[in-house]
Length: 423
Image (tube, rainbow, N blue to C red; front, side, top):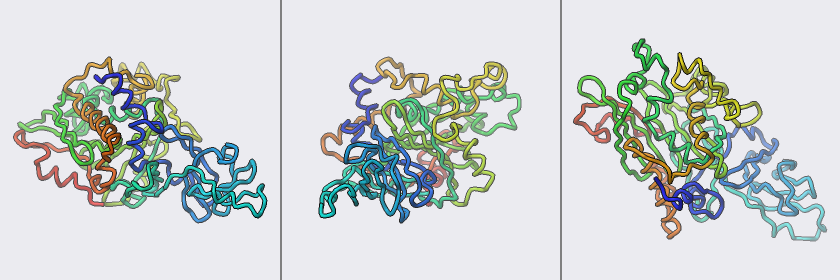
């Protein structure tokens, strides 16, 4: 469990908070490039780390992310006119570029130079593999974006989707790095009965046979390498090897032949999180079939038309089907993403971690909390987070492997080769 003070430090990410300042040292996914599809298209609202912002693509194709409210009288720039390399407020015509600089004040005398002294809060943006990243920290500390493989491969190698979860980012993050719940929350009953073993994946079989994995957690420059060990046949272990990367990225261990997957948990505010889900191939483009199955209705969580709120919510019990729960799946909730969403949102907006009872399968969760809390405290003492300024340390992959029982997963050559990203 955590103390009340540590839980508060861990979960609060607004401006001026210790964890908020830590997050602002890192580049974060902000929007999909497709949300601002062409020069001078309509601006959109974006909420990140408790700040209300406006994203737009100017006439030259550059993406800007600026404060929502006009610096004049505070009208929302969402209603603005995106024209001639700037966003113009419809209230009095003040116009701002992607750097937040005021370019025009048509309601001021022609001889006035007041516009040169007015600037909006604006955050640098970079586009990578169909995603617009934003850096919200001090300009003199701005590093390169992290060398995550899915952010460096060609755009046709990756499928990205997102949705809004109504809970604190920590709940979503902890759900991802918890490999023990896959033996329960995501199980189909035929897997539990082992009635048709040949049709199941290796992971489905082994997570059904051994429902109490043993965890080994290794500290790394980027965060944590997490090995979840289960018994396999012939005196061997099945290792599911996941990566947790500062401040809230993860890559989940996968079977051979399956596309790699990764997530980014970006706080929208303290009670909502942008849940980004990426699937990618490092060495080839996605096929049309793969792209179609992993985007839109095949995305991790289906969203309502015209936005990013999930279709499955607490109001409709996440589309729970009690008959399916009796006869088909452990939960009766369709979809792995929806199953995760149901349990993480059911904890409430921010979990009271003073009331928890953690066990041995929570080692990765405990370690990730400690790393974040320590990094936030270090930053308060002037110690910058190492990973933020060393983007190359993010150049890793997840994997899985069946190894002899006397071989440590992080010492096996085949594992070392598989987790080295090549983008």
